Amino acid sequence: MVQRFYIADTTSGAAMVLTGAEIVIRCLQEEKVEYLFGYPGGSVLFIYDELFKQDKVRHVLVRHEQAAIHAADGYARSTDKVGVALVTSGPGATNAVTGIATAYCDSIPMVVISGQVPTAAIGQDAFQEVDTIGITRPCVKHNFLVRDVRDIAATMKKAFYLARTGRPGPVLVDIPKDITAQKCEYEYPQSVSLRSYNPVVKGHHGQIKKALQLLLEAKRPMVYAGGGVVLGDAADKLTALVRKLGLPCTNTLMGLGGYPATDRQSLGMLGMHGTYEANMGMHYCDVLLAVGARFDDRVIGDPKHFASEPRKIIHIDIDPSSISKRVKVDVPIVGDVAEVLGELLSLVDATSERPNPESLGTWWRQIEEWRRRDCLKINQGPELIKPQFVVQKLWEVTGGDAFVTSDVGQHQMWAAQYYKFDKPRRWINSGGLGTMGFGLPAAMGVQLAHPGAQVACVTGEASIQMNIQELSTCKQFRLPIKVVMLNNRYLGMVRQWQQLFHGNRYSESYMNALPDFSKLAEAYDHVGIRVDKPGDVEGALREAFSRKNDFVFLDFQVDPTENVYPMVQGGKGLTEMILSAEDL
Image (cartoon, rainbow, N blue to C red; front, side, top):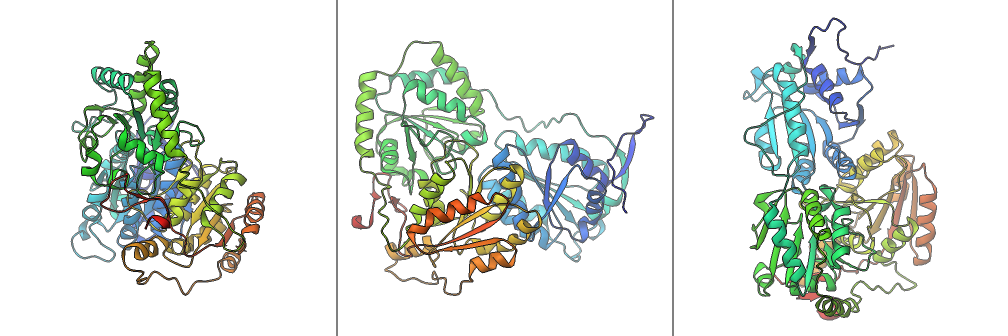
């Protein structure tokens, strides 16, 4: 039997002398890392050897490095902790790049440790050598190549600090194999200071006062909340502000759950597939408070169209480069969104002033008129299952309390539209990069972080196959995830665009060689259920979630012709929505 141990300090008080691999593990322990998602290979074998000798950091063996990063990503999004992954050099590192870019686009705190060939072999076209630093530079917050064993501890400390502070993001630490074998005295830094990196936390008091005055004087105010509200743990403060001032609030795809979706003041998601009332309110407001959002192309459509209606814009963001990047703002406030909203709430509490009730009442009547269009209404008939109906039933069966991951495409939009998220960090999806294959491994990270929680992966038959090998990981670690697959036999969003904008020429979007997914799930010792009739949808979902200890794969055979509406065509403005097929 191999003895397992913790690296412990010496009783004499003398400095510990450890190998680089031991230092890596000790650093992870110092950072209180619970799970390390990874896949072993030659250049990281010393690190894996040290992992074996301890049991504080639990390793999760995935079946592909991309899945390791997505799992760490899902863990981070659902917990407000740094996700950590370990991959080997060469193909291990390149397989991880898609996951790293996914985290980078959505500002997810992550530390990725990659192995590298020995230092003497760098640049010699050695076996499994790639320039990991060069390859990842465009899609990380920062990266490091460790060339001296004495630098490992300080570098790891910097990596975790950079990943979680300011605008979060992935940080990569590339460690050559020989460095992990060398020895040095070990001491983990208590703090870190980087002369060139000092993120602003507190917002400018004068600008915050100016922002409040604009909101109080507004006749048609609007709050536009993005992923920064969720990542910044500011949902409670945003909710308090919106309710105290009686404002309408819309959320981006990444910001869902930042304000309770079932609340009357919520207008739902905005943007390309947002609600009619959210998009109209966004366009016609006279004062817009943007919190932790980026005004990206999927949110405001054509910037010229958006600018055609005059309004004052207040923008709160931790990242100064995001302010006035696509849309000119009037009151920029750089700072941590929770800190800024906290100060804004204090100013609200200190005054008896409130928005003019008559003007606000008129604005709300207009919003209710838009809301009466009922743009998300669906008609579920007796024959074909409508995919939106499945998501509605998922929300009902789980009581709106599940963690929901998704892949990318039509199913992602239906999940965002029809699952009403009342809490932050419950909606886990790839927004900025739009990564197929994200949903299942992300759900693994979420389930490990929240062992007793309901975790559903809403996916499509194309996306799930991008990382379907992770059914094996779910078996090994007994993860009771529920896969809710909306199987329309197409690359759904591609088919929709080909139908609407490419003359019904369905070039390579039909999935005509699909497996029997329920039997495939059973081959991995999971539960597989195929659902063909609308009347069986709710019962299948209830059965799945009653099996609290089982991984259940639900294959819903849905209407292959169904499209996602509302829709704002690329290059169009927010008010130029296609609400249904009748608008074409």
